[in-house]
Length: 99
Image: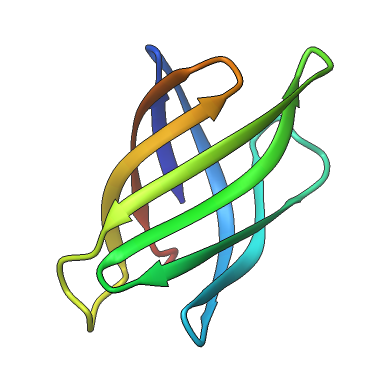
């Protein structure tokens, strides 16, 4: 589960993130979406970055999540920043592995 606060707007997203050979893949879906969106990204050292394509009222968006991993052995919980282009708004997020 990812909880994000972007420009004062809070929301939750459920993601299925797969890490293989330092490549990130998977899907994400918000509470209001009916379809899952594919994600792609990388793990570079202790920096985890992934993107998903979305839209807002017909305008295409690229949402980029970036986190610094502090514990190589435990990716169950981490925090980072999220940016939304082309609107130039950003915020923060926290991620917790589903139990």
